[in-house]
Image (spheres, rainbow, N blue to C red):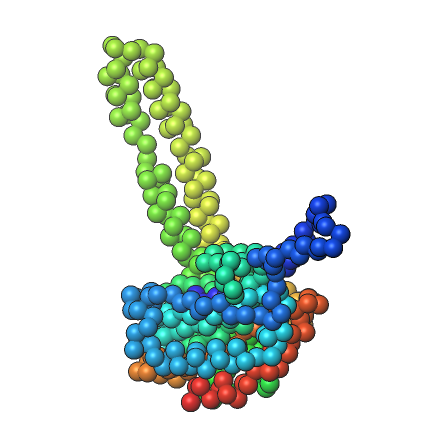
Length: 377
């Protein structure tokens, strides 16, 4: 699953104050040299980094990936020229790239990501505009990530089996220059078509029934040997075989074996009761599904707190999360797998940060979404 990579966390102050020296000459002022944590007047850019290989072993610089890199070249240049990013205080910028394969390589294009991150002083190296290799472990303060051909960039997998892969749909936000926003990311496609569909109530109940059947099957596998009748006669013969050598051990073995046989009916009954409870839950899911009409089963499923994770009556009017699935009919071009076919624009969301919110808002306003969309044609 693809994840957002712009990490925002508070950093340390950007300079160090040196105490005055008591040996100052009356006519001489000693000025401390700049320290490593001293902030430049405007953000500078560290050398780019990139994952050297794709997960399937192709070098990042392979000519096969040239179309994706050309698109990322344009996006990176837009970031470098962005006035909002240029006004970010106390950060050093760095661009990083990665190219991955698709979850369904036969029908989907490769996905890639261009991360534009601003790192605070704790992540700075000693050189001019240098960022330490471990910068991502410390986290970036701000940034923008461009995801190319990443269907699940704004989704989290919620449920999966052989018949359904369901995701939590990213929360819908205010549009960016007319483009829809999910989970803080603008989603751009050539025809403005979205590649996911809602999971229906019927599909969700079917999944619940399959999940319940899986629990029954697991219960049966785990308890198959437990339900085999205990061979008390065999255990008694084994105990008597050692009596001549150790009478106390023989007596103990007989006691344990007979106690186990005595408890066996109750133990088996508890196993059968647990299975019956699981079977009852399965029957309840199936019965509830049968009670719903076709229209209700076709409704988009929303994650609630009622029975079978359906919304309760009091939740019906709330903006609950939807479950979605990837649209198998979406026209991904599987023949041109390194062409940009969808782009997420994911800026840091810092509405309540007085230092970074204004320049990041300016950065978003300055993005040329028409030019970004043109990369899809």
